[in-house]
Amino acid sequence: MPPQPPAATDPVNSPAPIAALPPFTADPMAWTHLPVSDLVRHRAAVQPDDPAYLSPGGTTTWARYDALADAVRDAALALPGPATALVFLPDTAEFHAAAVGLYRAGVLTVATGARSGVAELAHIASASGAAVLVTAPAMRGMSADALAGELRSRGADIAHVLVVEPDRVTVDGAAPGRPRTPARAFTVDDVSYLNATSGTTGLPKLVTHTQRRWATFAAIACRGADLRPDETIASFVPAPYGFGMWTAHFLPAQLGRPAVVTDRFDAAAAVGLLAEHRATMLGAVSTQFRMMLQADPDGLARLERLRVMYTGGEAVPRAEAERFESVTGAKVLQFYGSNEAGGVSATTVFDDDETRLGTGGRIVAETRLRIFDGGREVTGPGVRRGQPAVRGPLVSLGYFRDDAADAELFTDDGWMLLGDVVEVDESGRLRVVGRLADLIIRGGKNISAAEVEDLVREHPAVAMVAAVGVPDAMFGERLCAVVTLAPGAALTLDGLTSWMRGRGITREYLPERLLVLDAMPMAAGGKIAKARVRELAGAPGAGRARAGS
Image (cartoon, rainbow, N blue to C red; front, side, top):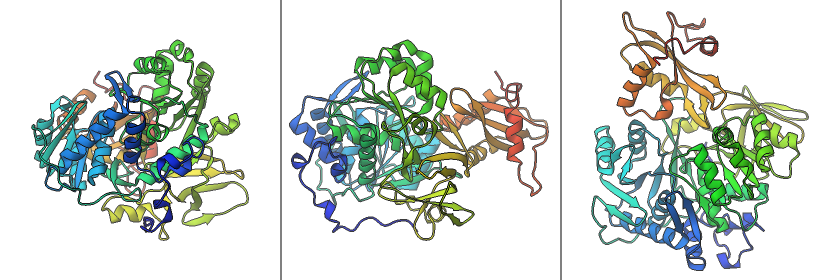
């Protein structure tokens, strides 16, 4: 059973005004009742000309951020009552203005990453009931109108296209009409935002989000990093997902400080942006900081103000985290958790090196944790090992309109389960020791093996398929498709990926290795023996003989 939102009479919904609050860095938890919308309005009033977002395309001030959000709000309210809008924008100021504007309009937002393929977009639009596409003039080489037409051809019910540019917003190719009055206003405890997750099987699911959970997450991060009033944040992670939301959407507005963002990650350019804007805090998945170490270690060594990097999205390699610290002088921090669960444990700048670099940190004070082993709760004393389940203000309300998925996500008494095996020691330090779910984690992106298998299986040459991760020094894992072929068929990696691209498949789901077998290893129960498949795919030379390169 999913947890229920707080009652409308919750006294924390009647807080002191912003001007009466202590500074955010002095008491970050005192700010968790505030939506980003109110914070942006406040910043635009008291510091209108200060930068809110810094990117290669220019500077967006707080006043411009607020005005663009209002333009999105008015454009959405000029339409005949859209219940849900699909946001597909680059990870720049326009995304954040769109999110704030739709919140002000009382329109439910469903957002996905700028690299998503049209097949995934169409599924998300249909699953959410989105009637409005909010996008840029062009994405993925397609005009906004062409993209909307492609989504409609795949079953999405997109009725209107709202285009967001740095200096204007249009609806269906024209200036918006007269805005109506919002049907309702969101509170910080309403589900106002959805994003997509691969989950462990099947098509992407939509995770429900309230503003309070990510405001609280950002406050905990501020506390753990001992952030100061003069921070400049650089966030190079995809904006629509949890990591991007707290680093680039909530935290800058809470601090009233700029965020450095970019529409496309390039390691060398990212190092240049850190130096140019004198960033003090960096948000990057593990693959990104490793790429920066390879691309420009000398540039990283010259960063004068960088103090903290939050990383994650996948296992954090200790040796390279230590190297990043040695090169930059910044401390590497992380959260363990998920899009659905939020933060479960975290490291802080106050931790010793072993805790900070060798574990996932201590259990977050605001989170309650239980450990299960085969349905039996594991209790102390001593090290507890098993599947974690959590409750608390960081936990989402589950999946959008998906009772079956929620039934797998929650225990009968409302605790959210995560798909890992962890160990928690006597001091509350958590280590991930395995994964229950069949996921491939490439560069911080969770890729469902079952979903990839469903896609590859549709190729006419493929008889059987197993998708597995193969170790990779840069990305942690790369996606390998292990297949047997139909009689007389042939298949190369280039041929497979070209066919998948033609079907609009998201780039992350395209195999990077192809291993063709005469016979698929099978387990006694009649299922594919995934362990043996992984052994074959990871063997020296595997995946290259038939790579098509």
